[in-house]
Amino acid sequence: MDKVSFVIPCYRSELTLEGVVEEVRSAMEGLGEYGYEIVLINDCSPDHTLEVIRKICEKYDNITGVSLARNFGQHAALMAGFRHVTGDIIICLDDDGQTPAKEAGKFLDEIQAGRDVVYAKYSNKQHTAFRNFGSKVNEIMTRFMLGKPKELYISSYFAAKRFVIDEVIRYENSYPYVIGLVLRTTKNIGNVDVRHRQREVGHSGYTMKSLMGLWFNGFTAFSIQPLRFATMVGIFCAASGFLYGIYTIIKRLLNPAVPLGFSSLMSAVVFLGGMIMLMLGLIGEYVGRIYISLNNSPQYVIREVIGQKENADEQ
Image (cartoon, rainbow, N blue to C red):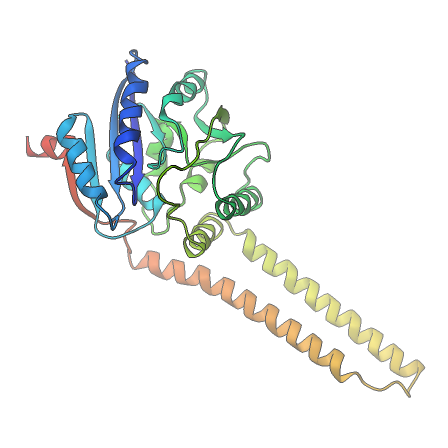
């Protein structure tokens, strides 16, 4: 009998988490051919999420709680959860109830049909305009920087075979980006249609700063396309400057009375100066991340483990 591990990163979910866990339990009761476990990762939530996790772990013996020492972000929390699962199939979903756990059977059917990874595809996405904008940018970034197929929809609700997760957790450097790790592991990825729910409590934990950090993780940790783009821009600017210089010389020879253009010169200087600073900043981003990785900055730090794993360690 295959075992399913549910990994749920938790942040500001004291009012929704119990409902999500109960929905997972209800869904798996209807799938009697599978065993299951749940791993809840508290990403140093400032509310009472940790107390709720303790309560849940005390109530059920197949649920493990992992509490991180500070807020490391959703992808780092997923990596922490992946290192505590024991199942043959891993399903990741959100803690806010918007990703319906009762539809987990769709993912399991696709996995059993031969897919290595299956992502939820939403036809009626209920996120805010800000989150939808962020998802759209992330879609473009993963397609052009990470080679994601255009027809593949990426979301936070997905299932993967154990060998995929085992390969993902081999990545031990800072700034994990789970989508990039999955895409470099396998191309046998599919979608299932899932109904996305309206958020009933609270608001998204993603801010513009956290979304920007996530995008930077994606295209600096798993792609050199930005550096190639910078090279192409440099070649274009150099060629444009050379051609413009020839044009200026010819124009001056044909009509010596033409005054030299101070405004056009300043425009060119400002444009090229801005491009140089942009490219230096991009290179600096890569160098900075290399420096942090060489200093062995951790993906996450676990403060404590609660429940099933804790009891196993004691034994």
